[in-house]
Amino acid sequence: MSEFDLSIVVPIYNEEASVEPLHQELARVLETLDLSSEIILVDDGSRDRSLEMMRAVAVRDPRVRVVALEQNAGQTAALDAGFRAVRGTVTITLDADLQNDPADIPTLLMELKNADVVNGVRTERRDTWLRRFSSKLANRFRNWATHEAVTDVGCSLRAIRSEYLKRVKLYRGMHRFLPTLLRLEGARIVEVPVHHHPRRHGTSKYGIGNRLFAGLVDILAVRWMQRRALRYRIKE
Image (cartoon, rainbow, N blue to C red; front, top):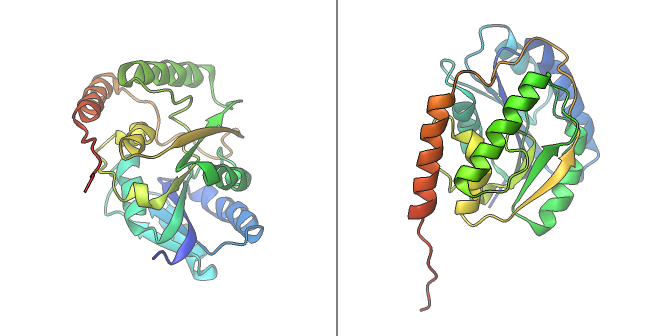
């Protein structure tokens, strides 16, 4: 049985200026919800003062738990470490850069009543045209190759029933296919529009990067998983 109603998982890499305001915004939202909750901040081997700031927040707020990776391992690893630490019935994920809006969390939870995963869709993205174009192109190609229909797989703001997360095995880079992997486990997925804000501090740490070859390999792996997935029901 879960210890909390809600777990919030945030991967953090060199975001020292965002830790405090992010916690303040999350705290304001949680105060409006009649739910027991925890906030799991995952430090992905930051080289700035992010971990120090996270520990300071955890001292003041007993809801906050800090998971620190030994070295930078990437966003998928940071998310996986957070997922393994959750003790809530529902898990919320979002980025630490304050572009995702914690105020959208109640909307996600409302939609979760009729689904297992609620994926955010950034209807008005506050990114550069190149980033928007690259993301849209990659999203369309992933959907075409995997026979999916996820509008914005790059949006980190989502609500997930934790029981499904426990079934998923992640590999490096596979956070980009998380909705598909959850669907393979039987999860029902819906989408809702969410807000998206300009980055307030620093630059993107988990960028698009040169992932063409690796991305193609990942897609082939996901297609193999889709074709080989076990699908059966026990009659007796």
